[in-house]
Amino acid sequence: MQKEALLHELRVIGIRSVFLNLAAYLISVAVQGFTLSFAVGLLLGTLLLFADLLLLSRSVSRSVEHAGARPEMRMVSGYLLRLLLIGAVFLGATRISWINAAATVIPLIYPRLIYVGHACLHKNGEQL
Image (cartoon, rainbow, N blue to C red; front, side, top):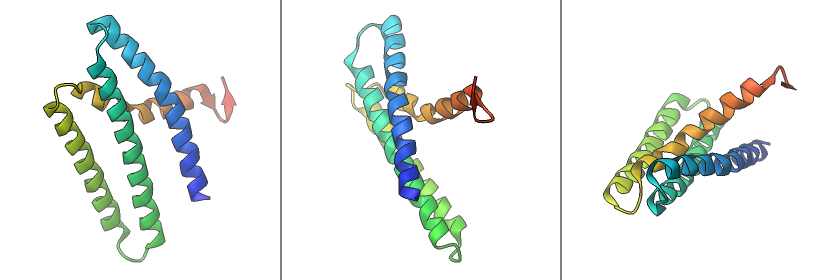
């Protein structure tokens, strides 16, 4: 059951991320023109988003499976690992000239936008 829920969430976020990436890229085109570095940054950020979500799922499932063995420490260590990954990717994006570092960070905001948008459009299970 847990694997199906994870796949469903990844599918929902993946499909909506495509549209949000297109919207972000079109906005960037209006501001700075066509740049490949922005598109590469969005792609890298989206891959980072999925890696972060997979690590979060792994951390939560390990904490639940081993509930008696200090689940707080497992969650904190998982959180620190995810922060380290985000920091390493962002540092790499700032060091590599053909990747736009700001575009790398943008997809990390997508889950918040997706879930808030879903909550605004679906009140009490009904679509507005």
